[in-house]
Image (cartoon, rainbow, N blue to C red; front, side):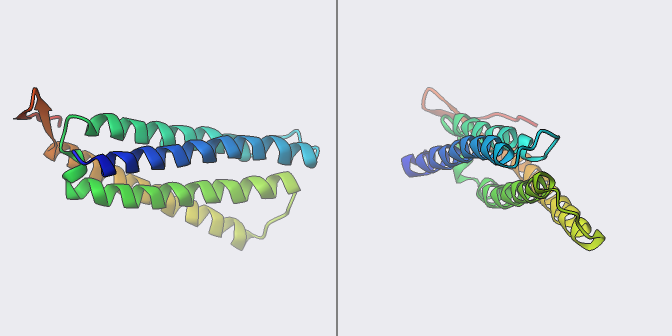
Length: 153
């Protein structure tokens, strides 16, 4: 277990929690500024960042404490792909939410583009989760300093 890698998981999780908190403040203040009381996608960014960002990274940290998860190549690739997909998804939700609050009328092309990027981000997240489960299958658990092969899947 590498302390630097564990610290990296904590740092990414901390970044996501700060983004989640900032998105909640942005949602409240942005809708207040525009005197907007309707439904908007901005309201779900906070929860998405908290669960898929912070809580997920704390789960990865817990899995890493007594395992070789951080050494598995599939997990390293998963983390990169996962973060790209999550950031893309949050960006599309943010863009759509801002446009909803501002009351912007969008062309069919722009609406299709946002939907397309959102779909791609969900596909990226799906691919990353497949890698995550494949990494879990390779994971070794350490108990009392001894390595034991534990099959999770």
